[in-house]
Image (tube, rainbow, N blue to C red):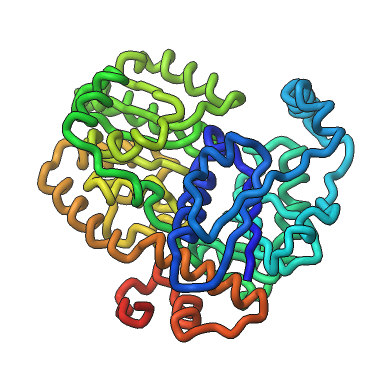
Length: 421
């Protein structure tokens, strides 16, 4: 069986979706106990370099670009800015139809893991990730809303299997789009940094010097999209400084969103937090484990999350976590994080203050995070995806495949791992 995986992300701007995809491709490439082969479809040489090295069971093909896109590529950024300024879409978007390229690859199944979807003749697997646009339409312009509603809805209805990371998102999709629950498969993720080398003492010293950081900072790794709630986090820091005399340094990583980041910069200036808050921008993969190790705590005030890779990554490095009590996060963390209301800056401040000042609490959260992380592993996640591919291709499933597809280990971590080897 040959599976096509369509890569349609830009690592620097796509946040956790890009990190998760890279980890999945790597984990599938490491599976050696099956005959499956994988065709990785990329649009640029940069995407291929980012995914390399591929496994012995994987090959890469370049997606052909249309003549229209080749001609328009130099002016596309200006066109998108004009569309955003106009607000409403001039034409309602259509579901992309295959031009025969995907069918020509000789694959048995195609996987669309990055929210884009193309209607084609192959059995398909689709990851919509979440339906944030239906809960927070104010964070999207009319063109983005129209595209998401058109493509997400079509993908969820026409794909053979829809894969999500948590039961919360599964229930949301089945309710919002009337998709049969049996069609939606929950497969949890794991730390995207799991396969990266452990940073040495010298690596940590070089990192701290490179970014001119000092010990004892709170970390928030996230692209600065509106729903990530940076503004209330800044309000919380100012509250701690002004009301309690507690100065908590904050380091933020992730690409700055061009539309919303100026509001964040303005809030930092208005609150006189310039000397307390650092935005490092996109941190390259070799530095990710290091930044978590250097942090005193992870704070995640997001308003909407299908599943948080930074929480997994923080647990891996022994970094205690404080996070929002919304959507799928309580399901993910169980008792391994300090939960707070992300709409209340005082609640955020209280959680940050507790973790920042209480050594014993940090130790407890660190131990619980270490225990909870044992429930997640990319090798198991890759095997579950492979089982979905096999089922979509009409192949007979092994006992291990059936066990993985019947097991939501996000909510049921206590089941014996011996069942899946």
